[in-house]
Length: 262
Picture 1 (tube, helix red, strand yellow):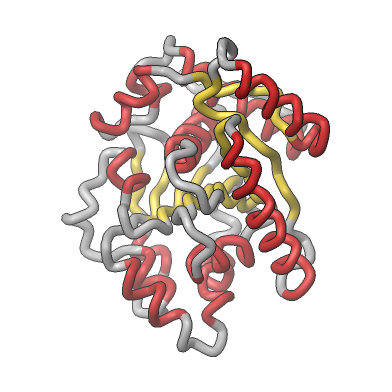
Picture 2: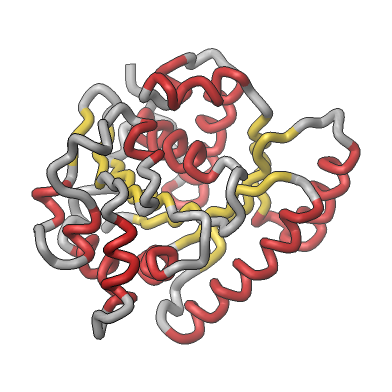
């Protein structure tokens, strides 16, 4: 059975899509079978792995609205060693129509159940809002990975997300856990970043990943080339950070056997 990780934060600009893409690619590099699911109408995760969001015939929208079987929509990306469930602007329609469906909150969970034996990990890139699509992700997920910058407003947004996770766990998905908090765009020269980082560790303990994702030019450049950082520049600090994150995830779930592909 696959382990489903929702990469979520209602605050934009925290490295959420970058994290989803690079965690998926890093897990795939360890020879895990990985499905990356783009749930954002902007389609950035889709474009970030080299798929033209405007050219795909079907998207996760067709899956959620039960118009296409999930296996017919998944795009295999052998050059990256992973698979993609793509998204584009059609997701706006899905967001609206899911509200009128009797079991709209369970649409993604139901679809993923059909491919649960095909993948070791499913990584969900959530939109930057606590929307119906994000709720679908939290209902389908086993764990929530929260990327966040170490700044004052990030702590405020984290409180709202934690409240939502608690509600989903209490009402719909009792197995949902906080997978971990990932400090992104980290600059150790910034005193505020250090202070917020220490606060996170104080409040969340070992839920805070040891991995620190630095501000990194190569990490920022990679999406424009349709590549994860570890393919675009495997020697970059950003690529190494996400491979380290994958190692932490693996150690928590299957003993962390790092079977790096050639």
